[in-house]
Structures are given as structure tokens and as C-alpha cells.
Image (cartoon, rainbow, N blue to C red; front, side, top):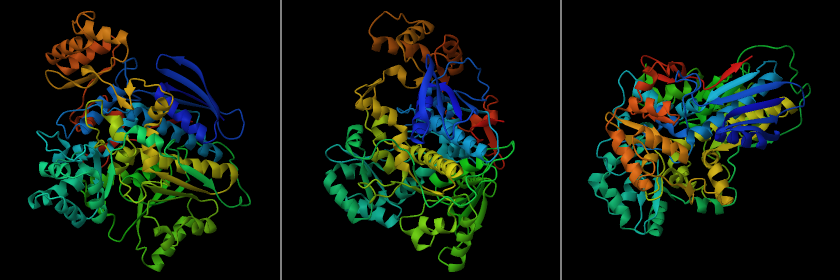
Length: 620
């Protein structure tokens, strides 16, 4: 099949990178116009079939087809800046192109799903997605929390916050810590000399940061780490069963073998069973994965989001939960009678409660997996073998199975002793430096970037395995990780560094002036993207500033002062009319689904709760 892909440069570049790794033949640029790019690729057996894929900035949002847009404006519109800046009390721009990269991954998923569907008789001729829809996937549970009938108080910006993680050592190295045990947390801080009064409430805030998008802790904790050298901090963490990772620099990440690419590992197993590959006869409309059965035994976010995306592509998902149900169901606020966090990532799935410590329930799990097309889990190392559900056991029972293991670290040897959770992976992979500009301390984002990107890579791996199965009849083992998601997010930055091309960065960090960050207006904030000198001149003229007067820094300050005097939407209109990418920054996530412009991008869950709808559309 010939695939033609068009859209903004980085999303298309990201998708092309993924398709090459999955066996596409020679993705070649055939047209470039400004920031737009068109690529072609061939996937699957040679034939005359055509598939068109389009990535737009706004998708079905009613924002005007010709409205200028960029990664910066999408971060502003989607609430990404708001969540990223919660600890600071004001919106902050993310220094990595998180929405653009995510949209490239979503497009790859849609293309693979369309090819799987085609092999099973389901026809798709065109796919559409957008950078804005990808951004909303990244903030989906924050939007749901803000739109619950009783909204979460943590969804509002902080005012005068105390500093949370990362922490700083005596010699100035920043680091993240993680533990799932309150006693380990208490022991670690007690050994560092932190006051007893600082520990209890701090633990509650520390654990809640995954759900709330912010973490303010007593200043005494930062003071405690600042009294100790990094070597002593590492030793103390190890003694207390606390995982610790420094916030590594991009240069340090590049020196470690096996840290590039970020692709899922897909390995076929066994011999092709008789009667395969699938013989598709006739053409059937519908979502591309209709008829695909998925058994999902996952927790937290990476696995459930991967399963949700497979379901949104048409698969039927059966979710395995412990007796009494997943504890995440109880995390407030509630969407109907369940916690919003659970509902966002598990809606539409069928749940089966199994006690895998018992032989009978393990037999039920094996029976379900034997009849499935995909088995997805994120169990701790060794658990699959203990329960008789490892790759070899299930492959023997179901040689056409796509067996997907979702983990934190994959096969990275230097970090496997650490808990595989989002903020540790962000720190270890160097994302904390890529997100913050020069002159600021590095810090991972409160947005769960590696959980989200890791889920997208996991879904991609499942689809790649299914496509290989449809072509060869052989099942596949798939490994995907949060670390792979982290490396995917910054692959273009590390490639540029390796080629000694900075592209507006220095040492992997963004180089920004005053107007590259959200600017204060009379009633909020706006984000503008004066990426080119000609655009910068237009910004000056719209704001009544002489583009030749004074230094660039003086002009930026003059622009900021003019913008401070007017309302956000008025500035947005004036700057967009001048062809300058600009957007009023959303600081109230509950307002996004209520805005008529964004209504097509959301679906109701329960009561007032809203979550982003499927981020693709398929045309038969």
C-alpha cells in the first residue's frame, strides 16, 4: 500500500521515523511548503491501494482553517501550559514539542490500524488527526478532573507555592526520588535531618502529584537535601529503598548506549499456523480494529491508555482487575460512581475480576488470552512467569498472539534497579533539561509526559505486532517502555545535537527571549510564536513598537508592556489577522470542553465530566 502523509514538519518527520523502523520502504519528501511537508511511503505487500493521512493543527475544532498555528499556540489552547505551570502559579511553555511529537505517534497508529483492518477486509482510504487532538490526549485526565460535578481543588493554579521536586544536592545537582512506601519516605527524610512535622502532609502531596499535576512541599525538605552531597544522597536513598535519579543532561544521555530511537521492540515467534495469513474477502466499513480481541492486565496509566487507544480504534478490550476492582476506581473526584482517573482511561472496557494467586483464576486468565489477538500487561518483572502467563506459555497456547509487555525501563541496564515511574524516567532521560530554557534549573514536567508517550509507543507496538501477524501468520512479542516514550519525545533534539545543529537550542536546551514565554495581558495570558525575524517585525508593528529601535531585548520589553494593557482575545485576533501564530492561554481546563469551538473534540463520561474523544477520523 502506498501511504501519502501531509502535515506540519515535525509531526510528519516523527511519523516517517516510526514507519521506517516498522519496515516502510523509502519514505521520501515530495513537497515542502513553509512548515508543511508531504511524504510518501510503502507498507505491506506491493499493490495499488492508496491511503491518505492528514495532520492538521486544529482538526475538527472550529477555529478557522486559515488561523496561523504552531506548537506554541497548541500548548496554550489545550491547557498544556496551564498544567505545566501549576506549581509556579502561572502558565509555562514546555521547551519540547510534546504535542507535535504525540501527533506523529497517533498518525503512525492510525496508519498501522488501517493496514491491519485492510488485511481483515475493512477499508480505509483516508485518515485525519491533529496536533491539538494529540495535546488533549496529554492532558486528558486533568480536563476530566476539572469538569467533574465536584471539581478537584488541585486543578486550580497555585498561589505562592513551596518548592516541590526535583531536589538539589549540596554541589548543585538536581535529582528526582520515588517510593511507593510511606515508611521508606519517612526514613529517607529522617536520615537527612528533615523535621518530623514536615513529613506526613508532604507524603500526601508527593503521592498525589500523579493525579493533581502539582506538588508543593515544605521548604525544609529542599533545605535538607542541600546539606548533603549527591554521593551521600544516593547511598541514603538505596539504604531506605528509595529510587533516586539525577536530572541528567542531554549530553549524558547521548553517551549511554541504547538510548536512541525510542521504538517498540517487535519479535515474531514460532512458525506460521496453517491457514494464515488472514484471507480478507470483501470490503467492510467500520473502525479498522473491529473484531480484534484485547486482554489487558495493567494498572496506573501507561497500559490503560494504550488499551483505550486500541479500543478507540475498534478493538474489544477485556480488562483484568484484582478482587474488589482496581483501587484507582476510588481516586476522587468522581465521574458518576467511579473515580475520574479510572473512568478516563478505562471507559468502554469490560472488566473481569481475577485473583491470580489462585489456580482457578490463573486458568481463567489463560483461557481469555488463548482466545485473544493481543495480550497486554505491565506486571513487575517475574510476575508473568510466576502466574504462568509469560510469553513462552501463552505463545504455546496461541501462536498468533501479539504479546505486549509495557514497562518503565525496557532493557535499559543502568536504570532497571529504579522504580519505572514517570518523573524518574523524565529525569533519567534528560527531559528536565529539554523542557526548561537556559538560566533556569532543570525540572521534569508535572504533565505525565513519559506515561503518555510510553502509552503511545505501547499502542504502536501492539499495532505493529498485529500487522506482522496479519502478514506472516506468526505471533509477536512486543516490548515497550516509558523510556522509549521519553526518547521518542526528544529524538529530533538529540539528532540535531549529534549533527551539531542547534535549531534554536544550546546544549539541548531552548534559548528563549521574553516574548517566547506566555505574556501577561489585562485579563490573562497570551502565547505568541515569533519564530522568524519577519514574524518578529510584524509583532512589533501590531504592538506599535518600532522594529528598528533599541536592542532586541528592549523591543521585547516594549512589546510585553503594550500587551499587558489589552485583553487576551483582542490581542489574539489582531496578531492572528497579521499572520502571527497566537493564542489566549487556557488557564481553566473546565472551560475547554464548554467552549463551542472545541465541542467536537470531547465526549461525556458521566454527569458533567468530559474527556477527549478518539483523536482520529477514518474515511472508508
